[in-house]
Image 1 (cartoon, helix red, strand yellow):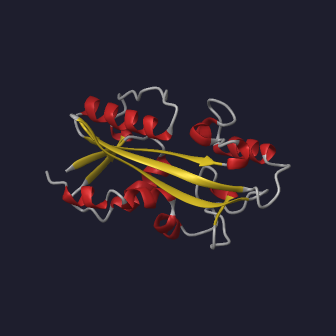
Image 2 (image 1 turned 90 degrees about the horizontal axis):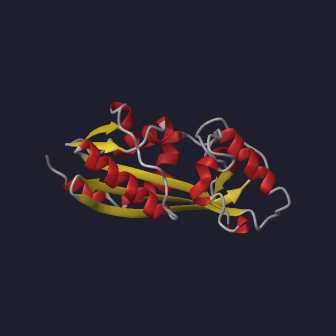
Length: 198
């Protein structure tokens, strides 16, 4: 059975493909397989609204089951920023490095224990007929004052998950995929994904 990851972000696609390998009955595609598809503008005011819109739109337009992910870093000391604007925190077309630089600037005067934050991940699955599931996963930790590690993407070089002592950019990808916010959200879809049949 085909399911489309409603994203063109190669890092996100790679992580989700790795996590979905256990569902051998699923043929996992992504928006890279549909170059003419135009995704909707992100106009929701919450992760949940944004991710549901993504999944529903892709499923209806492409006529297949679609899985969408919307994830951001939430820092309470910054009133929840970057939040839903995580991917464009430093500007509409900002790079990951530029977003991290802005976060470091905005947090330069914030000291422990206020440097806490968490990744929030929402995953929605929709069929052409409409929304099927929408779940949330959290991963809590600390935001460093300098980047560490060369793996991962986004804010990974700045984020240390509690009790691990290393950033998401320092640990092995296989470990990150077992403990991350994305994994926690996907685990809540296990029964649904396992029950899918052609």
